[in-house]
Image (cartoon, rainbow over all chains, first blue to last red; front, side, top):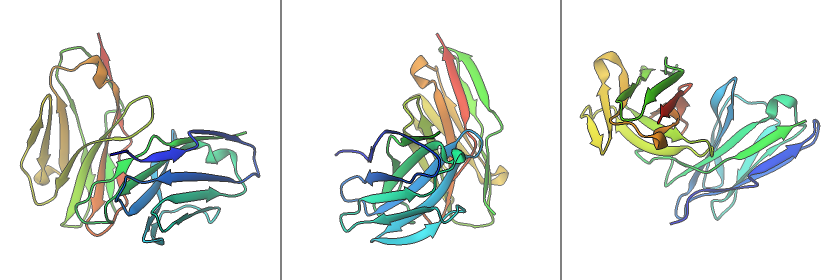
Length: 114
Length: 114
């Protein structure tokens, strides 16, 4: 079974631009979560989607948004990019939210903002 | 509030030595889940183990073993006879029942020297 896939793997943008990252969960997994990893803040939860609905959101500004499609694929968008948005963005999928299901992570998208 | 502490920032060991990575967590919830993930240089978080709060049995998987002690809120990870391939950053994480977001520790970078 294929794992979580994320595209693109690398991105370079300039301040003020916007970016869209994509995540395809493991087949059959319906819950998708996004995390941001930076050297200063570590791994932080961004948001979680299940059945095309956002279930939970971390403490990030409104410039960070996401959505989930009917096939469980998810996208996250960051508008008006800032230098501090440079990070590794990781997507994780699980069968269902909560419960005893384990989250499995993709390889991440490394975003560099110049 | 939930918190995960990994006090060891970096550890270096010589190949074949045993090494223990410490993890201490804080939560007032009675039902929760604890995880260990491995992050090699490629960036992907690789799932290693999940432990439920109501199951304090220690677990061994090959060279890996985990010691969960609710009395001290610790969930330590031991690698026996370490190998160079074990070099990575290891993260301990906490998730509450009914939620899907993970609270991560700051990670421990393990370097195994041949």
